[in-house]
Length: 181
Image 1 (cartoon, rainbow, N blue to C red):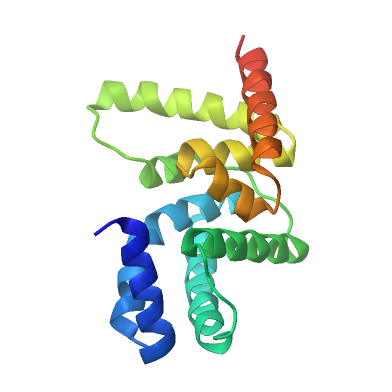
Image 2 (tube, rainbow, N blue to C red):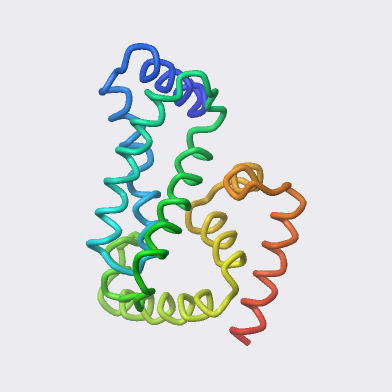
C-alpha cells in the first residue's frame, strides 16, 4: 500500500472512528520531521518539543472538529499548522540563536568523531548562511532539502503556485551558492 493511500486510510479512521491508534501511526510518521522543522525555526530544544506537542494536539482537535473539511494532504495540513504555530510563537517571543550542539542531536548521526566535528562545522556554516537568507528562501530550502517535500507539497503548505515555489527555490539556492563562494 502506498504511503499516501495509507495516510488517507488513517485519516478516515481518525475522523470516522476517532481512532487514537491511527493518529499514533500518523504521529510516528511525522514526529521527527515536524520536530526538526519546528526546531530549526525556534532554535531551542525545549521550546521545539513543547511546540511539537502542542501542534499534534491541535491537529487531533482539528481533524475531529472539522469533519466537513476534506484533508487532501496530511503533510500539507500539518506543515501549514506548524508554520502558523511558529508565527504565533514569534509574536510572543524574540528570536534566539541556533545551538549547533542541539541541532547535531536532531540530524542523523552515524559518523566517527572526526567526521562528526567536520559535519558540525559544515552544518554551522550552512546554518549561518541559511539564517542570512530572507524568510521565504529559508522556508523553501528547509521544506525541500531538510523535510524532503515535493514542490507540490511545498506549494500547498505555502499557499503558492508550484512555479512560484520553483523560482523561489532556484533563487534561494543561487543566493546560498554566492554566499558560500
